[in-house]
Length: 404
View 1 (cartoon, rainbow, N blue to C red):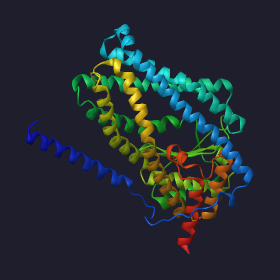
View 2 (cartoon, rainbow, N blue to C red):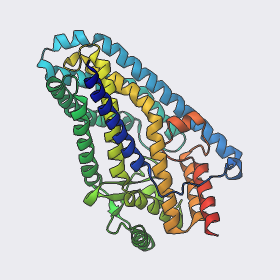
View 3 (cartoon, rainbow, N blue to C red):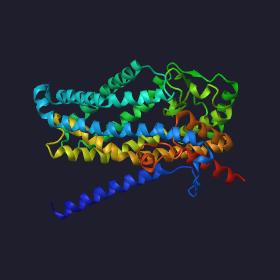
């Protein structure tokens, strides 16, 4: 390589890295004050010893199940990678057709590897009164999820193999753009599908609260819908989804079964509308896009050592690389998620002015979902997409102190 070409390559890489960091720094901004110093609160001041022990017992089992499921899944992929060349030769459906069949085989293998742990987790939730689904549903629901994953895999593998055939060394660049566009499309369409079977809020005081909060947060016209999940779970939750005209807030009807006060539900609504106001769905898609490039590059380099993804037999290897990368990328994803959740908490406090109700809400979440208020560090890093219960309670105290 000549000095000129080397300089051009270094300059190109430096420019891409600079643009990546610029985009990341823009997406990182939130309305949470930069000097917000949360106090380290003692969980025993807010929860009884029995409650803390029960949440520890529940989450300890869930953590073990999670770790084992990851290890077994990776082990299953390793075995499949070793057999893939022979299987691919026997399929003989052409490059893309063989790749699609191998992708379906890969997903099915992962599904069967995860099934015992899915059933164990469902049984554990039912034992602790958090789930109401039947034993049959423990198996049926994963089957439905598998169908959706297979359909998505058909698109992904077809796109990747087609691009790898056209751009053997640089397929990951257009693939990152294609998958980001696909994520954007799903983010737009999915809320319309999830609206089916939901209904509007029926309590006049909550409808009035929505109107007030929409005005304060600048998101007028955002539908707030109730999703009936009480036949499957006793846990309470809510979510903000959609972009542009598809944006809407979904409240689980378990939030409205009498266990949570009106002021507490108002905090939940304020939190979810804050996600919409701050365009967190848009930003999530943007984060997906800027992470898709380096992840695609690593997968391309891993498979290139065996000939590149032009060879459909390397689809399981690409899946293995993607799974391992996903495990290592999880801490970064969780940091971003927690930052946006903290911003939504802060904006909800600003719009509702009810820190006491927010504290009650977070404490009740811990009791009704058996969340450990202050989980171990490794759990916080690898599994927690929200600030801990104690961090959320601490934020209410800081917000109140700043208002005095």
